[in-house]
Image 1 (cartoon, rainbow, N blue to C red):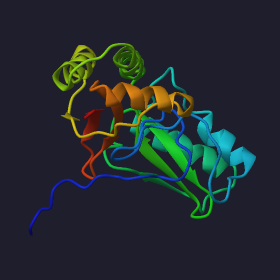
Image 2: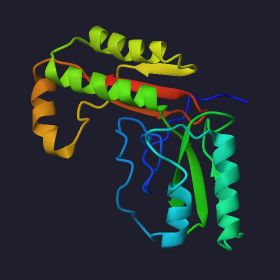
Image 3: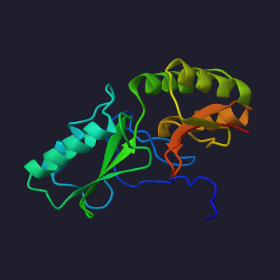
Length: 201
């Protein structure tokens, strides 16, 4: 069978909870840990039963999360709900979760370890305060990942040039227009390889 290039997850339109809410797609930056639902919101007890398991300051492994989410759903009488593991959400890999109330699904998605998230947040801010080249930006991201002992990742230099808080987009766009490179998010392939991007012109 012919094998196409790795598939990229694009945008998921439900909330991601936990682990810094690592998203989620090509040239899309990760959303905040808690934001509004699109579509049908879950019942409060389901939302609390899932989101209470996760947090930005801890890593919840995929196996533990699957077991705990299943137990909480069963305790709430939601035995018809299913727990789905997204690409790479296996073993001790840190995960967050999305809730799709219409489909009655909780989807576990790869999330960033707190150390990596904090390091990347610091790099992202530094790259907005300084004007760095593509190679320099890439090395700064690489250094965070290597220092944390991250495995099975790929660094890409074709990321979005518009990454960051909405109230800073004018600042970010001016920075990129000056030839500066930024950290532009994380995601993964359909096969579960974690991707990190830097972007610029």
